[in-house]
Image (cartoon, rainbow over all chains, first blue to last red; front, side, top):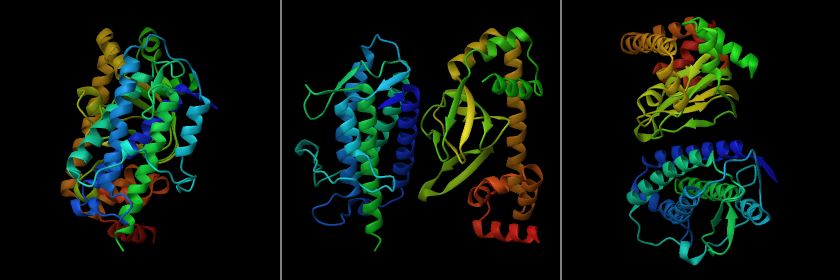
Length: 187
Length: 194
């Protein structure tokens, strides 16, 4: 799968801004609402944010490190790697916004039961702004040649372009989950 | 791109014409940019990085207040500059979200290039100052209208200034722009149609 590098960055940036808008709107919800679960074995909105913060901390840190040391200029076309493409598609929602395949999160990314809701929300918002700044820097970076270690195993690396798309789809997937949790609790 | 730049030149000429050398320098770094409908181009909290020139589509800047209350601050449509100008020029975080309401086509210039051009060319500085003066004139006039006009007067003023918006933009955004309740807006619209 081939992408125009600048368009890829534009798309990820606009999705990130939509996520920011959604989270800013969550600020008007009460702590109780954000702690409610649809069922005992599911996550509350606050837990989803904590889960996303886990990935933000890993990937934003790794992306920042990698692009700081990067000397290769940007190229017009990004070609997705097979593993990156697989991960991105795994995360992607169907066009109607429904999750294609339910997945279990790795143990280290499981949220805890005790959560400081405001701190998770504020951390998540600053992560998104950090990500937007990194995306801007990525405009002058080669998305094919810069490699980012995955959170699963550091020896498995994805191309920067794949990491951006995978990370973005993962966030979108969980923002949908937050919507679902908050909808359910109204009834 | 060439015809897009021509539209820009025509628009600029109406504010403050640039000579050929200034124009060549001015147009060197503009880039085409397209966005689907409901694409957020700048989020509140970000610093605006671009000045946009609108070629197609309608956009709005809006403020998100407590309890998800939104206020539409401005609509933009061709031919005009767009984006979040106060954030662009001050370098401060944007107070507003800037989004497309319909599929949009722009050319845009990065703030780094804009500032360099303003440093190097006095006439470009004059042009920017004049453009901002017109914008400020519009903003202050609207401020007065918001505070003094009745809902009906606000509605009529909009009809006079930008009647085409009614066909292009969902009415809830126009109601929000005028600071009128959506139900009242529908009533005003119904009375006007008759």
